[in-house]
Length: 399
Image (cartoon, rainbow, N blue to C red; front, side, top):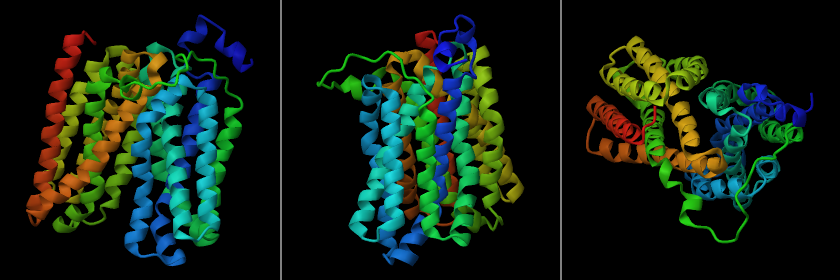
C-alpha cells in the first residue's frame, strides 16, 4: 500500500500507530541522534589534538552548538507551523551534514565556528520539526505512546553512538567520524522522500506575533519539562565529582543503567498515559524523580547510586514523553510546531541554567555537602513543579 493510500485508509488508520510515515520519521530521528552523539564525545579531543586550539577555544566551539539551538528554538515552531515540514526537515538535515563535512576538511577556527553554528541550526530545526511532523501520523488516542517511541531515538543514540564514534576515531581516524556523522542525516533525507507532508498549515504571513514564537498555553507542560532538564544538567555536570568525593568507583555505570531503564520505560509509560490519563502518569513520576534525587544525595555506595538511577529513569522516563504528548494534545496538532519549540526552549534553558546555578552554589560550599544540597534542591524543585502541574490540570479539567 502506498503512503497516500495508507493515510486515507480511515477509519482503521486513525488508531494505527505503526504506519509508513511514522516509521520513516522515527528512523530519521534516530539517524539525527546518532549523528549528534557519534562526534560529540571526541570533538574536544579533535580540536585540541589535531587542530591545535586551546582547551578554552575548544570548549567555546563545542558549546556553540547548544547556544545556537537555544537562540534558534523560538523560531523553529513558527516555521514548522507555517511552512512545509518535510521541506524544512530536508533543509535541516542538509545543514547538519554540511557542518559536519566542514569539520572533516576545514582547519581554520573561524570556519570551524561557522560549521558548528550551521550544524546547530540544522539540529535545532530538525528536532522541532521531527516531532511536529510525526504528530500528523500519530492518532490522538495514542499520542503518548507515539511520542514515547520518538524519545527512544535520543536514548539509543546517547547509549550506542559515542562508542561508535570512539571506535571509528581509533580505527579510521577523526575525519571518518565526521564523514560518518554527515552520512546519517543524508540518509535521513533519502528516507524523507518516502514521506508525504499534507498536514494543514497556518496561513503564511510575514508578521510574527509573540504567540507564534512562544505558546502561552504550554507554560505548565514546558515548565515541568524544563525542571527535568535542570536535573539533567545538574547530574551530567556534577555526578562524577560527587562520585569522586564519595569514592564510589565506576560512576559510568550510572549512565548505562539509566539509559537501559529509559529504553524500557518510555514506550510503556506512553501507553499508560494514553489509557489512564496525564495526571495518572506525570504526578507520581515527578514525585518518584524527586525521591531518586534524595536517594542519590544519601548514597554512600555505588549500589545505592545505581538504585537512584533506576528510580530516576522510571520517573523521568515516564513523565517527560507524557508531558510532551499532553502539551501537543492540549494545544492542538495545528500548532504542534510552536508547542514543541516552547517545550524544548524551556528544556534548553533548564539544561543550561542547572550547571551554572550549581557552580555558584558549590563555590560557597565544599566537599560532599555541596553536592547533597544541590541534589536536594533538585528534589524540592520537582515537588514544587508537581504541585503546580497538579493544580493546573485540575483547574483545566485535564485527566
